[in-house]
Amino acid sequence: MGDIQITVNGQIRDGDGVGPHVRLLEWLRAEGLTGAKEGCAEGECGACAVMVVRPDRVDESRWTSLNACLPPALAFDGQEIVTAEGLAADRGPFAAGDLHPVQQEMATRGGSQCGYCTPGFVCSMAAEYYRPERGRHAGASAENANTHAGGDHAMESECGPNGFDLHALSGNLCRCTGYRPIRDAAYALDAPDEADPLLRRQSEAAPAARPTTATLGNAAFARPVTLEDLLELLAQNPEAKLVAGSTDAGVEVNLRHDRPSLTVAIDRLEPLRGLEFSGDWIEIGSALTLTEAERGLAGRIPLLAQMFPQFASRLIRNAASLGGNLATGSPIGDSAPALLALDASVLLASVRGEREVALADYFTGYRQSVRQPGELLRAVRVPLPLAEHTAFYKIAKRRFDDISSVSVAFAMQLEGDAVSSIRIGLGGVAATPIRASRTEEALLGQPWTPETAQAAASMMSTEGSPIDDLRSSAAYRSAMLGNALLKFQAETASAPSTEENR
Image (cartoon, helix red, strand yellow):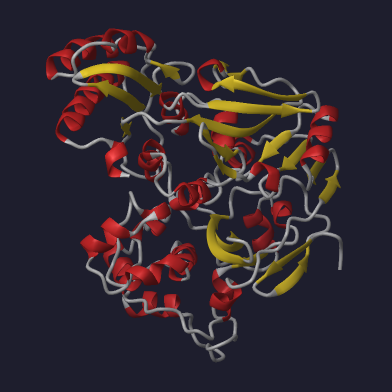
């Protein structure tokens, strides 16, 4: 057995000789596990979904669904994966030839026609089947389950009587069956059998990250396990490609044939995965996945709680991170407008030390930032106290799992009926995410009335420099900016503050 070892369906497989740019999906299929399919190669269809063991609490773990088409196979050195073929692999309560309960319900309810997307659906459904919180809502009405789902499901839940949240399948697209029988299968699932080995696996810790190095031709892959080693590696290789969830880098490899000479995995590096609370700020580690951040914050930052469910799909949020979303510098990244409204800052680390930069000063141009060669975005810091009234609006062609045409975030404080402070973050209307500074100045000190909002909406529609593209026209983007302000005023005038709702 070689140095690179990946456990798949309970069997340790040799990963030596795998190239740094080989995606997990490619490697699995080369190993003969052809259930997972490549449908889009950019994480939008879920046909490639598999389950991976990820940390949960101190000595426990949870099965997490991921898109296998995006991350490099080498990132799973020492990790445990289950594919659709391994769900009922003659273990525990399943007799030889039996289907897993998820597979059985999909078959019974007619949840598959051509079958191309079915293995991905099954893996996402199985991860939700084993979700520890699901049993708390079994037997509740759909309305009550939606209201009390809590944590990472609070804002997006559409739960069945068994506590199954359909949004766990939001990243899985069906091409021919139709979603009703798939929903029926999800809602028919009982609690896992106590003897189920996949359930029992969650009572044990996830595998620790292993130091990994691999070279093939002119390309190399590395996974440092200490922050000091990582910063030293970046100092020596400032052009290295850093990957956490690979939700952006994987697309570059698949569709644009990007082939960095050195890929450095940081997703399991514990110093980048913290979630810290102080009296003055909340700090979110740059490699903490969005799902983990959502669960750990548990609604403490209401603006982010509104943003998380609209950020792509659950499959993507299970891998993507705030650090990765900001490091790409994309003007349409969903997190930047919300963090700008929160007056967040980023902590940049290198062998020279660490510095804090306001996010408003971080972006310098299209996909460019003040981050210097050899520097790492270590964490995002949100100052306290939070604004009393917040909102996040994303305008896109689809409600979920889509790129925004425009995104707008508000954070406002009132003194009496007047605006005492307001910050507005915008995405999709300039080369970088920006603050609507002129609108903020116009609103400051003004009474928070429909008339004030109407007057400021005209100014808001001129913020940035929107363009025409495939997602929308410049005129539409401008109109949506003004409408977002009017909507925010109408909602805040008739609803209690987010502070009171927490």
